[in-house]
Amino acid sequence: MRCSPPHLPCTSLVVLFLSVATVCLAADPYVFFDWTVSYLTASPLGTRQQVIGINGQFPGPILNVTTNWNVVVNVKNNLDEPLLLTWNGIQHRKNSWQDGVLGTNCPIPSGWNWTYEFQVKDQIGSFFYFPSTNFQRAAGGYGGIIINNRDIIPVPFLLPDGDVTLFISDWFTKSHKKLRKDVESKIDFGAPDGILINGFGPFPYSSELASGGFPYGTINVEPGRTYRFRVHNSGIATTLNFRIQNHNLLLVETEGSYTVQQNYTNMDIHVGQSFSFLVTMDQSGSNDYYIVASTRFTKSSSSPKATGVAILHYSSSQGPASSPLPDPPIELDTSFSMNQARSIRLNVSAGAARPNPQGSFKYGQITVTDVYVIVNRPPEKIDGRLRATLNGISYLPPSTPLKLAQQYNISGVYKLDFPKRPMNRHPKVDTSVMNGTYKGFMEIIFQNSDTTVKSYHLDGYAFFVVGMDFGLWTENSRSLYNKGDGVARSTTQVFPGAWTAILVYLDNAGMWNLRIDNLASWYLGQEVYLNVVNPEIDTSENSIPENTIYCGRLSPLQRDQSQRVNFSGSPRSVLVTSRGILLAIFAILISSLAR
Image (tube, rainbow, N blue to C red; front, top):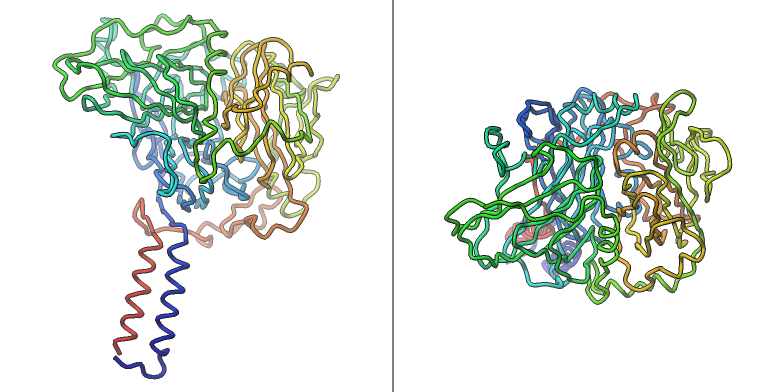
């Protein structure tokens, strides 16, 4: 073998290859997706209606990735109105540009595409995405996100034999546009028309449903095997109780945190929440079993469609599931639900995205730097329009996203004056933002003065749920806090006439949405943004994306769609690993050496 000019010497090529190999093997893979969001026609409850699907699927495709992977999703908006997708529970470390809410992004106009690019940095677990604007979540558009452990981090349970994603959701036969108008007109949703499981209506478990003829969901399993069920409440208003006939639910993870492993016969899953259970197929398998999701704390509906029912089908089954359905908890028993929530605790000895145990962050020993008591009230008229408030302020989304206004130093778009406690003044509509201290430790108490359960969600973070109780929170309520193994998650329930307290370490710079996930509440203004700025120059924080869409006061900066950066031409899902890059470089080097 000889090396001749102008090529590098052989030894240099080997050194170069080894250097590149080291870098490539350490790099995190990229995975690419092409998604088209469009209307589909479906009849989940027997009535033909318009739903929102992705690539012709309802629910949409699952993003199945691994800790630290880079995710690139090119979204084509084929709806007739603007669109944003948000990634519920994904923290977007130092990259709130990808959060997909109106405070960080201009919506994607109808007929346009936009490419999200984010890293699932230091996360594991079960999450989901959904449309965040225009009440579109009521029509679907949601799908699952699975973040697997890296191979070097052991999972704190035996590898299951299969992985099942379930979406349970309240459902209305009215279109999302009609529901949107109803909310604006103070027309109550009432009870949902039905409960869907993975986009399907109920199995005909009663004679009333037998003539419906609409499809239902079936999960196929093998006797004796154990499956991981990732269950998401992707609905818009209703707490749902989930259970599987004659099977225990071993809780192992919720929204990116491994939990103390406990068996439950059923679980209340509130709007926006996600849970992982291990379910062992330990029955005889001579017949099928019911998978059930039923409403909690709502006005009763006489319709049998108001209970979602799918089928767990053993391969050995010789017959259908037999009635009755497994019993739910007492319908209006919030005490049962609160005690169940308190029983969910962090597995402090397990590693997750990192090798160190989840309990190594001693949150109970850290000094709190900011305290907010946030009170939500029922909707009321403000300046002649129905609005809902947090601490007396109903959030008004400006035409220019907050993050863009901050980037371009545009004054007058928002004010950093969200009150730390309710003010003794008339409610108002405003664009008021919370001011967070970077690497500060914030305590937030949510006080629910409404008559229904509310789900609070914070983008960009996992917070520790340290306490909840009925009545008004006081300074003495801190004596009830769990300061050792409170579960870390991104969505927590607050019961009517009760409070929930969380602690959050503000180490993720950005503009982050804090909202009530119940869709009518969110739409009417029960949200606020948390501004966290690193006072030092942070070169690791992502800069504004090249393909940014501009709107509002920055509209003159917007280029035509044809001139914008556009990822296209890839298959709908492509994984580019460092190994592939390495093999390509190796082939080039071998070719050079052979000359």
